[in-house]
Length: 384
Image: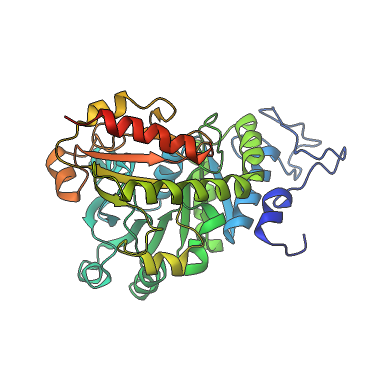
């Protein structure tokens, strides 16, 4: 298709409709296998683990949005990350950002470590510190920027340039930003992963993961692993995800407006000790984030001040839902220490700043005034 801006690509990118019937919506090809006309003949599809037209439409769409070489759709974000990690072998070392999603830490610490894949937690926001860790066994750097849950910012371009100098792969989890706000491959990263369950799906009604590669060699390797390991996204969820992506820009515009409003409110509360949000000018990493992304996202974390009870805060939320996940149209509140990052040992959590009084908010698209009322009520009732 002709080159269009991202608002148009979200709707018409990838496979635009159905060439066979003229249907505007990509059909759901709910099939496991395909008729072959002759023995040994060349056919586009043989078996839906290997290739399915609905999933392929999604994969082409995310590749186009991220400006990558090829896209891959998986049954979950963790299935995508797991498959990407299978690119490495025993004895390789992966450096990971010092506050990544707990599931990423868990798969490395509890699963891949058993097979000899080594990891080390590093402050990837400090490039000079990162470079000191680049000994010969390091084969990959896994970044979240903003990172989960403290929104730490890493300079993706600087890390990618450094990694290429040493022949190291740069992998970026772009879940919080999506390609609407940030495109890591254009900054030099090699692979982008998403928990598409979040903003890309946007409606808390599916589980999905995506990966996009930046060159043909990586594309071929990941295609082999996707087919060999089989953690693919099924056709109906692929269709749902395509539908969700079509409204990504209009949803995120409202998410951003609401998040900025809520962050400003939280900064003025005596019950709030610290606010973590990349849209605040005094936030560490603000200038780097402004350079590499076109918006601050809609995740806000904050710590309750001494004299306020975290349990009472969550108990008195009425509109904002206490729950796992993020990125849906509804606002969610999460307690990272006992929920998303519970798999990280308590001592390490505290060292990283993921303390028991930390709250993470995923700001939805409700009326921002109602969100403030709900937070005011919960904060007022949390005073001891």
